[in-house]
Image (cartoon, rainbow, N blue to C red; front, side, top):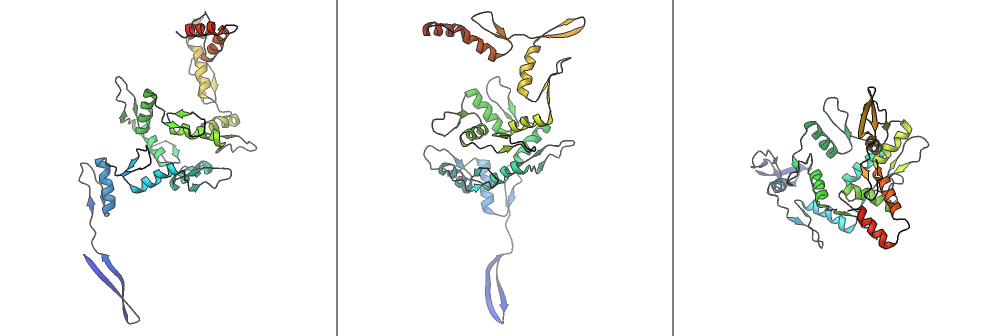
Length: 319
């Protein structure tokens, strides 16, 4: 119902507002098991597109196949092509920029340490700077891996569709994320890796150690975490082999260490660890517990050889 509203002021009649909606229509989604409702027709139409899969807003840049259900998302996407990043971090020495205000808000939590999204599972202390991070984490509790690989005999499953897409790229060896710096051929399966790589070019190191008098900075959060263990003395990666007390601040060190436990035998009831040398030279009897030592050894076969002999040796070693 529409009604005209009048106001009286100083004995004069003024029409201040022409119309007012007294009764509102509620738009309800009729798709099965969907409970979406909205008083706004525009919101309702956008919602229906999530069921139909239709994406009417298309990017008109050459060779770009981006499509979206919303015009606003398309406008944000086009900023990728123009390079415009209007939202800038005002933290000292930080050069972060973004096309979206929300990305800047999340980024600033790197500096503040704020993690407003907390897991509500019993005895779980997980916190995240991003709501998406919390959603992904909760799937660990639910053990839900609804996104599964459809390759024959592959049992891979993921809690998120991004994880499945990344897994498939590894199978196909597709690396869609490419560095656009001149003369740089870097490619990656993951967008996050590309972001970290570009900091080599920009010199940006947003992750800084907060220990007194320590000026350490890093291009990624993982390395900062590892660095801080120098201060704390923490060595969370421990060997689970019987009677072995090895521990390390780095997971990679633990993996290398475990290779010495590949063989074992008993002497007077005591377990003795013997390193099994899985990395073997196929040109001589040399063997090693580490692949990098084998690679160094192989180079000795090529010393003092002619190019023709070196090529033949290389082919024989890698048959």
